Image (cartoon, rainbow, N blue to C red; front, side, top):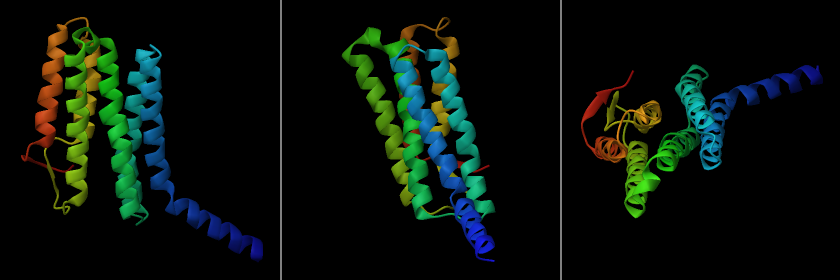
Length: 179
């Protein structure tokens, strides 16, 4: 009987951490994307960001399904999102395009990352009312990552505009219904 009780306890503990494990997976793939970009493996970087987005899509669902929503999970999710949808896409596009602008390219990259962090911090202190305020960083990061496929089409300056548009939308106060 003791073995069954221990197994049941272990299963309950694992189940209670499933959402956090998905969130940490999101963070892991975001970190891997950064490392891939810094080592010139840009296609892998894009792939890793999309895997992070897939994991991010499900961590909240799992937390709600198992009734395991927590303040820790909310904070961990935001830290993962700043890595996977703030820093990782910014480094990807910076390395591929914005380095040609020197300090200016660095400034636009940092503004994008800082705007994402601001957006996440504002989200963490707000009451959940069924609406997002400003563009979610996951959407901005996905748009920036998808811009990878337009590098041969658009001039480098277009990516600075993209960073600024995403930055402004993230810190703006318009509302979007959560889906």
